[in-house]
Length: 309
Image (cartoon, rainbow, N blue to C red; front, side, top):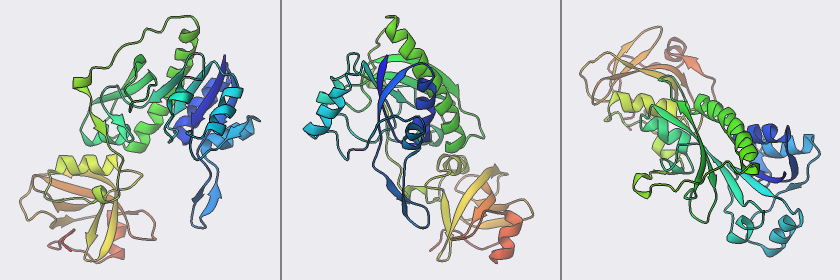
C-alpha cells in the first residue's frame, strides 16, 4: 500500500518506523524545522530525521491550504495518508486525496480527550485507563469514525513521559494492524458518541503552577501530568522552583503552601487537604536535585511558605 505519512514528534516517528517495515511510504509530511536547544539552532523533527535516514521525500509546508501544496500531495497518488501528531489542519481537499482517506493515530480512547493534550489530561483527571484510537479523519476535531481501539492502563507512577512512551509503542502496533485490516476490508467504522466527548486543551505554562489550595492528590497528579513539559512549579519568594517528582504525604494541618517537614528524602508541604512530599526539584539553570541536595542549595526551612508571592 502506498502511504503518505504526516507527523512531527517522537510519538509519530515510532509509528513511521513500524509502518516502514511492511508498507511503501511514498512521502513524509512534517512541520518546518524549528529553533531548538540553548543555541536555538534550527532542528529537524524526529519524523524528518527518520525519513531522511530512509531516503524518503520530505515535505515541510507551513500550511496545507495552499493549492500548490495540495497538488504536490496528489501527485504521489497515495492509497492512504496516516497522520500522527502532525500539528497542521488537513483541509477537505487533502482528506479526500488518498483512495482510503486519512487515518489518525490518537492517544486516547475517543470520544474521551479529543484535542491537543490527551495524555496529560488523562493523568490530570485521574483516569485509570487510556489507549489508542485509529480514526478515519474528517473536518472536525478528532470527530471521525473510530476504526480500531487498543486499551492501556495508567499506572499510579506514570508521568506524561512514561505514558507517552507506552502509547507511542501501542500506536505503532495499532496503525500497522489497522493498515493490514483496511486492505482486507475488516475495519468496521464506529460513530463516536458525542455526549461522551471531552476536550483535552493544549497545555500552558501558567496552568502548571501548583496551587497549594488544591487537594494533595490533584497536585501529585499535576507533577506527573506536566512532566517533562511544561513541568509543575512553585515559587519561594521570587525564585521559581520546578517540581519533578512528588508523592502524597501523611495528613497534617497547616496553611496551604507551608513547609511542615524537611528531611533527607522530602520537603513536606501542606495542601488544602493532605500534604505533598517534594522529592526531586530544580532551580532555574540548575540540575535536578533531591530534597536533601536542594535544601543545601536554597535555605528553606520548616515554617516557610511556597507560592506566597
